[in-house]
Amino acid sequence: MIQSTADATFRALGTAVHQTVPHSAAGAVSPVADTSQCPHPPAPCQQLTLIDTSTALTGLYWWEDVNESGNFHITYPVPDFFGVRDVRNNLVYVLYEDGEAELYDLTADPWELNNMVDSPAYAVTRAQLDARMRELAGMP
Image 1 (cartoon, rainbow, N blue to C red):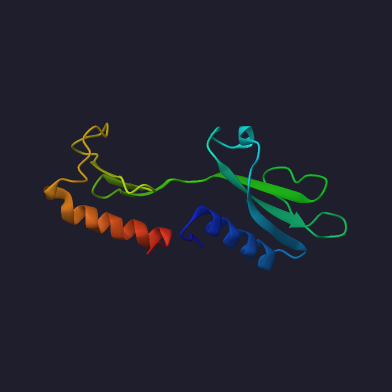
Image 2: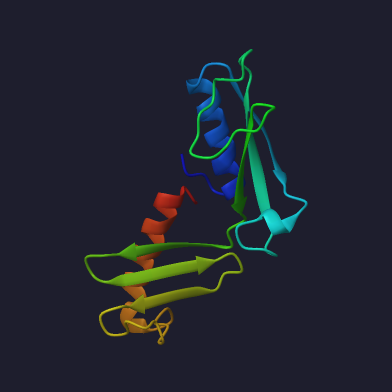
């Protein structure tokens, strides 16, 4: 279900809910105007609305409240990075939207103070972690 962007991922979630839950619909993914409602203000965030179309508005049950209109709003921050952790080898790799990257060997550097992303000794490791991250995130 993970797509190339958060918006696409949440659109896919809305489609999956609509196809699975009777009497439901997914609204459009749209920006949240009031960033104080975002998980990490003032960072921008988006919102997916799931709509209960049942007559009695009893079709959607979530861990949070559905409002009186039968709508549930999922608000999520717009991510600016993807990352992957290799638990077996104790490594972490992060790729930011602007192309910057970080690679840490948590055995040698548990506080993540020495970015090894450009180190020739970690070139193969970086390529492997980048490929795995892209695979998991559904990125080209």
